[in-house]
Image 1 (spheres, rainbow, N blue to C red):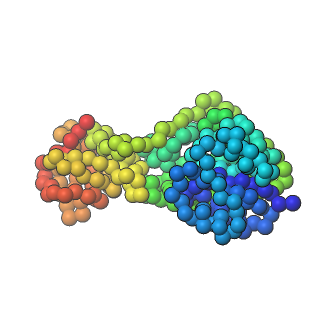
Image 2: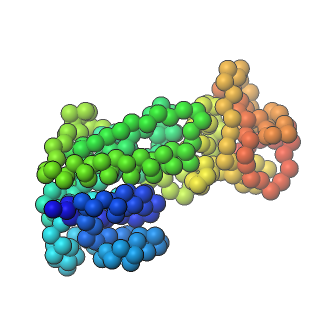
Image 3: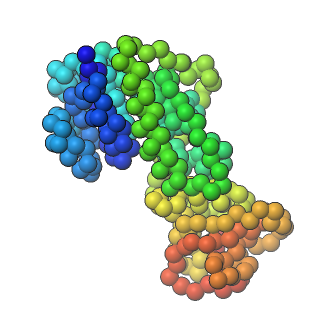
Length: 298
């Protein structure tokens, strides 16, 4: 008997998982439900190619939508990068309930913009977790979790690329476990009594504060580099976007004017920080810079 699943998904996070599921002869995808305002044509094309019902609804918890998906008689609902909160009625509608894949080391890093916050917090590792969905947000019992190391060579782009692949692998592995029936999981409070949440990063949160240590600035810039919004700062009354800085290890710690350009080199320029200095190597700026120019400081 095939494992019958309903796939609540959207965006590149979900594509690699779908590719694994569709080529497993023991798994049947009865429907794909995407975000109501989706711009993802890939899943729509997958649904058409493989004759899978393609659904979207403004409120998946409405009686009308619940009645629609109840007819599929699914064994499991799977959520990957979906944006609506599941309520109890829909969570428990499938035989084995609903599971979600989250690119965070639960019970820590619940919430949004997790990879960005992990870099900002100078973490040495990040996690990917598959968990049961409950009435909370990212609070359900943990089915599988894998940890990945973070080095100074990593940034938002590299973590994102690893997470796309990692999420597909671990979510597929978790789904396979349900072929043998219900799966036991570990309660998050057994790891930590509270854990913590992270907020979604919005427009304006990319403003760089030069009154930080060089390490903090290095982490901030790499956390929101391309394909993120890039760090934004102002100098000579003009905006600059910074995509990459070089953290100079063992740079002298000394007092001076924070935000001042103290040297200009062919491959970038050096700025005084709260403790030492840092080298800006990739940036966009419509203007000329000279030694002594000062960035605006919060």
